[in-house]
Image (cartoon, rainbow, N blue to C red; front, side):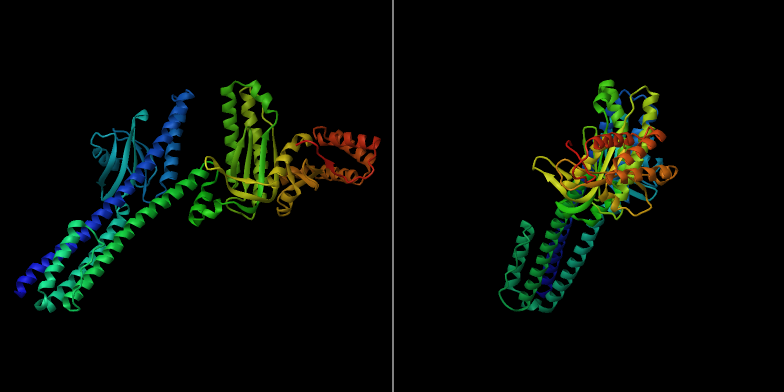
Length: 551
């Protein structure tokens, strides 16, 4: 009887535990693998849409026959895929069915690998693919992009893709092995007393395996060997239930984390340097996107006389010129660690100091402004060569505290900045036309920059509309450009000091002399006209402050 019971019970325990373990394993594997496949498919659809947009763009612009542009378009798809996939062990491939590798954004992948891969397509236009090549194992998803006569594929190393599932299998194997060993030992020691309770024990086990209900437990009738076995079995089921719930929770949290990363990348990827996006994701700080007060440098750039420009160009020419202009300006701003806040018609608003703060944000903003001012000259060379009107820009920069974060409604929300600091920067940009200067910054921005980085030409002390407190304004200059003008700029500062002191005749004489020396420096003419007015209409109380009545 003892050996008969042993021969019956041990196989039941092994089969039951194995069935539970491997059922849990395959359920977890199917769940995690399904989610991972869907996520790869989501990324591939994103890349597919991007490629379709690029293809439609060059078709609509009638540029599809340009081989260089077409090659650059394919490269841009590869670059975009690298950003979307962001995997050290995987990548993106665009290949023709004749095994021409057109786009490759992963290392150690060659035509031999792609040949093995193409065999697995089996004539399908999309789906899942697994293949081996020279000891390398890959899994991935593919879709046919008929416009370019190629197949887009996202690949991942097979071991990396199934790593979590294999770890779960090892963990389940250890638990099942330990549980079976304990159960067998208890049976061998106390089998003589296993009679009626063992039948109830087996029925409970059968009930659990048939219904796959891990919440059920073995009922313990006596505190004997059968009771101990029941106790350990219940612990094993509880551990399996906990492990299964952990697997489900892990899969859920993985999806949430990916969605969060996608949301952050979607907000910033077109307007923020890639390194900033990576730092935000590494810091895992949602608070960086919530409203907070912090010091920032606000950058406003606007095209002067844009209405005249728009009237002189055909719509398609205007769009091409604007896109070329924005591309140059935005690339410089992003390279200087600025964040593009928004485009306001032909104006650019950028933030330096959010979402990540750098010690040299003000310096970076001024440097970007000077580089933009230089870049517009190069841009205008192309405008002149094509017989188009030239662009002139004005840039205003201010530094101070502002509210930064996600601002908007449930229907539309943007990462932006608001406050008086922003308003003053906008006013300064508007003053560039009046003072005939390409760049105007506030004294608050100047004070944030270490001496010796730029030459700052003081222009005036102004009280902008809506503000009571006056602010000094400056035009920053690169040191190499200011060096030949040091004597002239010092003389200008002397004349400006005389103007501040109310010595209008002396100031006028000095400004007149400077204007004769450099008639292109139109700010001197501005001060000559002011001095003429003040000489005829002496002020009762002179502050040396120019009050602006318009925005």
